[in-house]
Length: 344
Ligand code: CUA
Image (cartoon, rainbow, N blue to C red):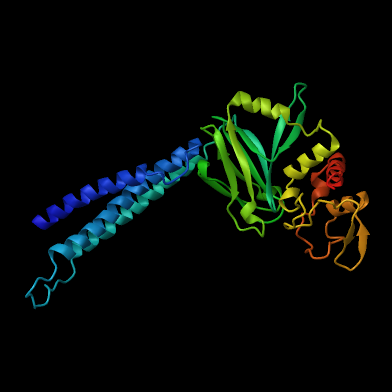
């Protein structure tokens, strides 16, 4: 009996030490959303159970190894013990109860995380090989609503946002570790749009990472997330406009960045996934079918709208998105061509 008391005390001490360490150690990123606090609350309960069961097992084993070890001169067998029904019932019923209780608090946590705020703001998120773009609805003073596209996810603090996740091609996964929430992004149109509700609670700069292997550029599929004060957000949104008031080349650069062109096309002559844009305009381009074309404006336009029609020698067809005709306006295409033409 004295052994049981000693082990029980050691288990309690070990549980407290390990539990305090696990719940306080910096094992995760900052909590930047209300949902992160809820998720971390559930995780803390797990840490305490992990601390208890680890202590229970390790303390019993270590105590037995040390106290009941074979001493010098001992020759006989150990004591022969048969089953213990009481103990077996106990260690079946208690864990079943714990698992069921976790199912209940897991369900409660999910309900808390998905709680809807009727005032929530909607942002459409588009994932594509290999970039993210974010579309906001901007209501101007005269009441008209225009869509604003950004390559950075800017969010106001303390206001729930509904992210409606769309994929242009394959399955991606939206993950901001600081928000603790992750959701697959599916292709297939409106029926497959998935939603994620996030209420940012801490200003700062974070990163969206794609958490689903989605091809060669998966590793680089990141976008910046900025959580700012509400007033700062309103100013930012008003400044963003689908209209670009800069010169054609600067606007073209902005679209190339926003729509992910620069993830595959370099501006400095290196080959990333597609041909570089440096010195492209006006050059003679060797195509995969053995012919050569002059890279004039018509060629650039065709390559944006129908990338599989004239594939450059040494590159694969089907890599470049084929839906730019639906995404870019005529002005935007002209501006991107102007930008490419300027890269001599
Ligand atoms: Cu998109 Cu990995």
